[in-house]
Length: 146
Image 1 (cartoon, one colour):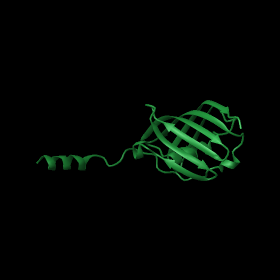
Image 2: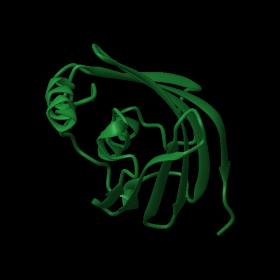
Image 3: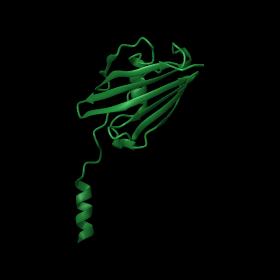
């Protein structure tokens, strides 16, 4: 009886958490990024009809390699992506429990021009076809010595 009750309870649970759908878009080749090597810290908020989430992001560029790591409100690593040229290697340790994928965030950052030294302190990118808006606030950007 207990097994049947558990199975019925599981069958009525929602199958998925609200999530920003994977959104296609171009990536800027890391060899074409301006301004040399850098470390960048940003606060990011992603808003969609069923999603409103914030994260802190650290980005580091060394030559052709760009590394983006996002942390949730508790400081846990929520996502990471390494981009070399236009090739990417993405990881999402929280899986689908975190409402935005690493490639979405990377594409949004490219679309907003966030990796340039002269990027605005605050900016937003609205991805109408995908139904979300990503808001960026620069915390710090510093050049790294070669």
